[in-house]
Image: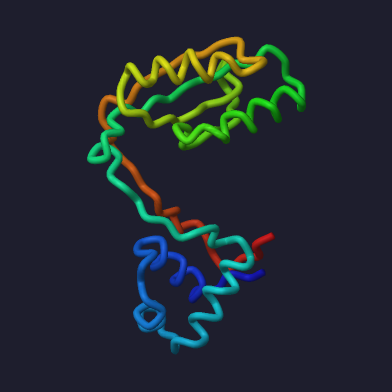
Length: 162
């Protein structure tokens, strides 16, 4: 699938405001509504647009603590990793989980919880009980300096998306 300039403009506009109406979107990218709608549908079907979400203010909802958790595994086998990944994917507190390199940890998790008391229960009652977890190191966010949800488009040109 080729991304052209109009596709990129659609994606940028939708990243900025997922609630934009098709009419407003079409006007902003210089299309009529029907072709614009077809392009959006094609971008959704291709998987480039994964979903439409509403971003919430976690602090206003009482979720005041963000933890970054480095997890080390005892064995590096596909089965061990698959089991760990399936388990952490089931925890609603885990916002992100990535396999990482360049440090002693195998995984880096981002978890959002109400407070330190809840975090202790989450850590001791869930994370450390997963088979294969051999080490946990937690860091806590003091203040968020930058938070973006929009991907940068400066490096995306007319290209083939696989």
